[in-house]
Image (cartoon, rainbow, N blue to C red; front, side, top):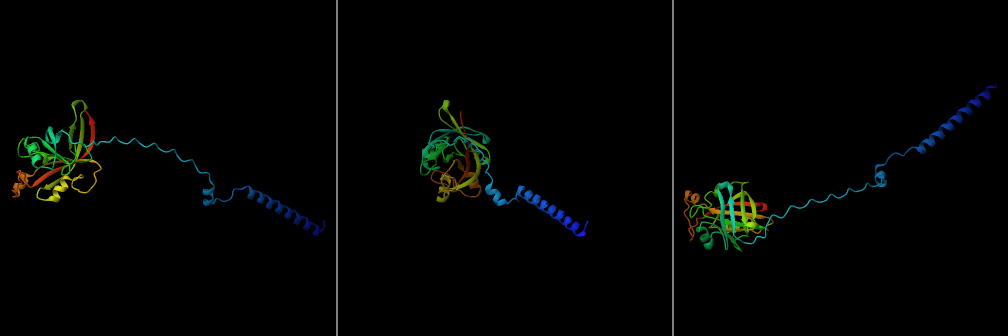
Length: 241
């Protein structure tokens, strides 16, 4: 065969093969997925359905009562107080009517502008009792520690409600300081001007032994010493008996 003719035939075969290879490559490129673009993918992807809303849990029952002043009975297991009668009166802690009630051997609970609220009410439920005289109802009150429980019961026997408070701190009140007295009777104990959002408790008794040991023999017209020991609690449980 003529050499020129052979070269032409070989060149033709090579060109045809290259053309078929390019065609196959073009077809493969057309059928292959394009490189992913995170932005375009997120925009074009079908959004997944939102999860069904989780039903909200039922709220805990309201612990606080209506706060109406009423006769109640107090129990403090940690210091041996059982069924101490607590008498409400309109006034302020350890004033003349309050001192008279305590002289009868029971607890006194002031309410109104200078006092607090009734048992279980949102605000400051104040109970005072003597420590060194009469029946010495609060003789062991200074021993009460944080975390210990105080039970207050109200209502007739068949519909009795028990409010349980937990002691959270101890504070001192000076009867010679108007600011200190205001803090004692505040709706949030120790914090005048704050709006109460929960039911709290103040148990108060005289600091006569401590004052006398410090050489402080001051007394008011009702023979109450200057300082008071206050145990502060918060309502943690309510139960119908």
